[in-house]
Amino acid sequence: MLRRFSINFTIFSMFLDGAILLGNMVLTTFLRPSMSSLPGIAQISSTINLPSILFIIFPALWVGVLAAFSIYDGRKNLRIVDELATLTAGTFIASISMAGILYLSFREVSRALFLTVVFLTYFICILWRLIARSAFRLRKKYSVSPQKVLVIGKGTIGSRMADQFFSELNGNRDKSYSGLQSHIYDYVGYLDLGKLVVSKSERPIKGFSELGELPAWVMENGATELIIALPHTDQELLDTLVLLMEKVPIKLWVALDFFDLALHNAAIAEFAGVPMVDLRAPAISDYDRIIKRLFDIIFAFFITLFLLPLMGFIAVLILIFDGWPVLYSQMRVGENGKPFRMHKFRTMLVNADQMVNTVEKIDSLGHKIHKSRNDPRVTKLGRFLRRFSLDELPQLFNVLSGDMSLVGPRPELPILVDEYKHWQRQRMAVPPGITGWWQVNGRSERTMHLHVEDDLYYVNHYSIWLDLWILLKTGWVVLTGRGAY
Image: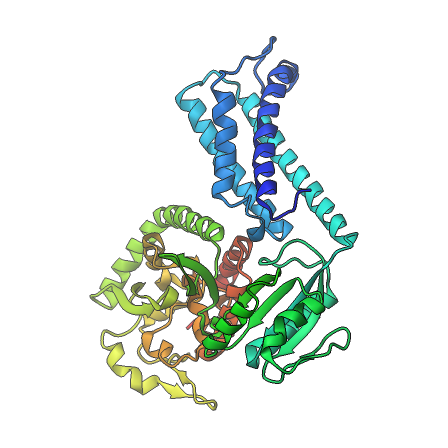
């Protein structure tokens, strides 16, 4: 019987996707003549014979591209929305690749036939995945052999892990976990090694007095999944527990007590055969990062071409009214704390940096406020440029170079980042942006220590659709000039 996260199911999925495309290629060669009556489609009266090599290349290419997008990695596509988004992106790239092959080789192949094959394959691939998910869900619902989870731990990480499993596994049995197989789970309990007692269990469980009794105790209580959650300072105890459980036929997991130190996400990777924890794992998946970067490049390139005359005109105005230099470049802190030089049109006096002490204030909570509505350093022309955010236009070149994104947390000054607490640094887990969630919800009316929470909302809820919504809302905010100074 196939399991959702098994290698057999992965191989089955790859063969099925390839077979669907192959079958649609064969079917469409017979259907193509009947499509000739449709408007805009060339007249073809006989069955089309596709080149034999395409029946090998296209299925292999289709499956290869989908594999590159991790569509066959069930753990990366636990949610149906993630799987469909990945399938859509993979289909788009695979279709472009196949179209390119036809353009360079077999141009006589009917475009209507090609598009029919692509769309039909795409929708059938969606359909069978929905059916498979429903089947797995029904299997879990009627399963008679649930896996039993026991948490062994000590300190904060142990109790936190136990609380999470108690609430999630007992409160919502349909949930799947990226590290666990697709079964129903029963929570046996939490064994606190500091007290050698079991707590938060569904039924009373007798504990034991010596650590050596652990293997027999685990077997007696029927646990099938054992999670060890210890502070990272208890390495010797961890070694002892693993050796004790060596002969017990049980699934063994170790929870690492490093995740509070992560910038946003933590991921496990292998280096020279040694498992390591990446404390700077990106908050955006590789798939989302590709989509975001492609969107930034395409949108920024065309809008920069369109706005070049306006930027040239603004540069001339600054030269006439405020003199040289036209641009103001300043070091800012980007993704993962990487410094970069951000460009803007100059809107302040040339010696504005030396006057910062005259405008910097401390609010009632002790936070530095370095911007004010009536900043004496801002020129008259600069005030107009800021009113409509025209001073930000040179940052499009920062986007094209990859230092920034169109949408993201605002890059802060190094002096302000130095005062961040650990939780505030999580805003640097994604590329900084020209506009962002806090800009469209207050702009300069919201001070630095307040808009960090807005940036964290963006980091935790990122999607390309959120980026599009922020860009649309930015246009309205700029036109109204709300909070700009």
